[in-house]
Image (cartoon, rainbow, N blue to C red):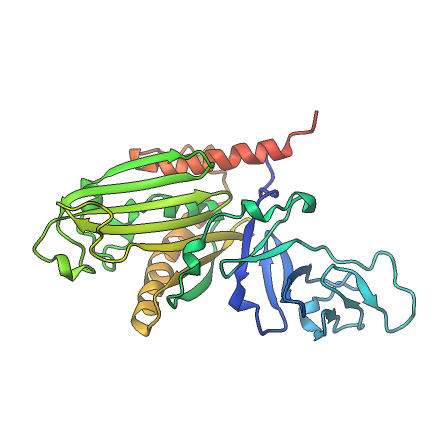
Length: 335
């Protein structure tokens, strides 16, 4: 049986704004509790939220400059996990250390690397330059009591919109008229794309009312569960690059909290209506379904349950198999 998590890869820990200006952010990731904080030089640290003395959560302590002081007996730890102050002695016990992960800020996201620290190359962080757009966006995070690969399945198979989101997206069955194409590109990303031609425009493009259009959705997946969605629409008789409304590109990034729970990160347009709509889609529609699936699986392995595979599952199945291949390669002993 392979390890529950791929290690030598970048995961999203938080939106940068969840940490900046605060003492720290306490968050459970990959089955362990962590403190993430901005240091005085503008870099970021990620240290285990557990004092090695009596195992008290450091999040019950306080921030002292670039250190965290334990609220139980006052030991202080820096961003490298080293104990730098013992209030009872000048001696620092050699074992007074915290586990740490490398953290990099990019595109407003804090990324962490749980594998071999010397292999943490920021150049391999997935491309999210879309988030550098100066337009204001609201960045959100939420917990789901579901395995992170179930969230990947959901996002890599957008045909579920016709059923789970029937009352919100109101797609009108266009996915049943579309063509699905799943493939892996030269950089290793897996794509799950839908294209629908010569159909009525969606409700959110009123300027095309009365004209048929071509619609597309493209979902890019990078291991372990880092996705970007593109949604576009153009007049049927016009090139795709003449989209009738600004092509929407949004992050959909999942990080395991534990083996059966996940953090889900997304963004949306500002404004009460937009935020409420996004929450309805994710919290009232996706979340109950995915958590019900998790409960129905009752701890069983996905493949051991012999899932039925449909022609719409190409993207999700490719992602699952590729992730499993990466885990096995990482676990293989060096020859």
